[in-house]
Image (tube, rainbow, N blue to C red; front, top):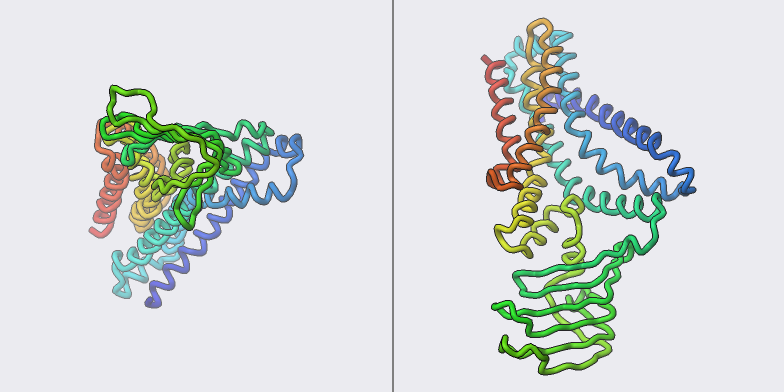
Length: 363
């Protein structure tokens, strides 16, 4: 990294980190002010509060990094304009493109970091926050955290119905049905409790019954029936897949959602909706790069009042980006446009817009 790159990156990262920390403090103080009465009335302990706000941190980071990046790049270039450093750069033979390159590289790095947090931390944090809010803050009964699983794996021709305790992931009162290619039940297993062996990748069904049916659809009576205390099955489904079948896509990572989508019939409504959500998990983090792309274009303006106009315009573009995202995602889920286009349309449109602004600045 050359000296000019270090100089530009340093003067960007300093206000960026200050902005991120400021947004963290504002978000936490605001949340405390909203929930303070609940914390006091429910007698929430200090340890639970620490856990709650630690889980909230990845969510705040992903939501605030784009606006922090925009504010930081405008602040940096505004100071450069104020102290005539942009003119000094150009007088030294440093072009606009050379000034922009390390800043856009920072935008790419922030987007990559945002994707990493969004993939590995945010879904789990949101899921645990939901459990804390339901079980601890609202003081709902433990029964409210049990959920009926009704899941059909189209690729395996197998259905699962039972109950799961979301606070402990325990599974009980399950019935599994296996189907032939024509949709006829060929075997049914019911069990009081299910245990999954992570090492052997097998299921243990406890205290249950197994029913075997004739392959002839005209015969509805079972041809074999027996009780068992423990029986193992090497089913491909995992507890995570069954649990995720009842989760909102916001509680799943892209990897989990991609595996979950495969269990739905193609071209079904839920398949299309979750396909849009999956593609947006990849497209969404790029907003940091896009707002910086437009931000540097306005920050390099040298006309009087240009920076002030640039700040207002960039904020408007930031709001417009999310507005277009909402409309585009809705159109994708209603199948007016393809799922991939629905997720990436805002990125494509505003990248082209930012590139146009940069071209005008260079000219």
